[in-house]
Image 1 (spheres, rainbow, N blue to C red):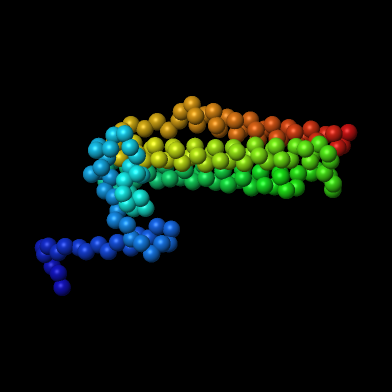
Image 2: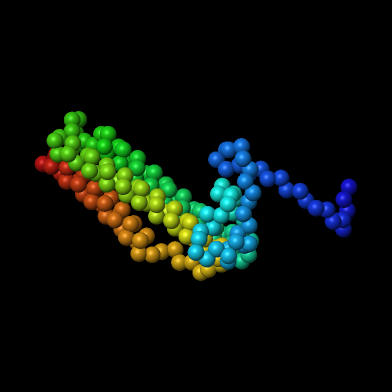
Length: 175
């Protein structure tokens, strides 16, 4: 039985298996590569499916968790919008039978929501990759920018616009 003063080397077994694949890539120590890759992303380092290991100094763990939660929020919004797009294309009608105008509007509205869902997913992925790359370089990070603000403004305006379209149809139906 080891005593408190004894020095023993701990053997770490790599059990990381991305996507359930039976491969075990070696984790990447980001602090070793962070300053050597000024023009490339930390995600492009081999092995491509390896886990990224960061030093936990200051508030790094909290910042990484916040970055992952932000990406998951973008992913959730993208999934919601793609479900709405499919629902609009499949059954866009306010009465028992869809009118001619509703049939004409279903496909463009569905395509609009699906393209916004793809834009939202691309925006979230880009922000996540950019932020992790800057974390690896120990650079200051500002999460917002004109791309983020413009895409989210377009998403908000399209949701409000579709609400008014639905309200207009409901008003026409009643009146």
